[in-house]
Image 1 (tube, helix red, strand yellow):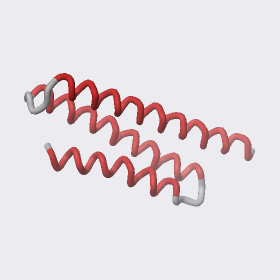
Image 2 (tube, one colour):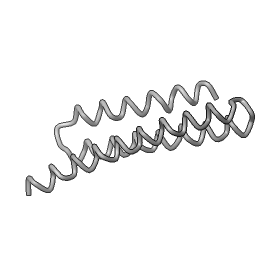
Image 3 (tube, one colour):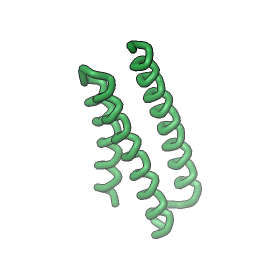
Length: 89
């Protein structure tokens, strides 16, 4: 589990960085969506950790709250980039 958590967490930030470094916004958005998928993967891992009693419910709730905030922020950024694309037309 520990390795999966690290991979999903670093995948989240690495895809944001890679998307930001892309020349075209459409291409960047795809990386941001992959990052969002990693956030959902982290949530699934947290659910498994709770089910296996590796973590306490309080830690689970804190983790889910942080992931939800990250997802909302990332969704807002994706919408911002999409708006930039529409303005270029």
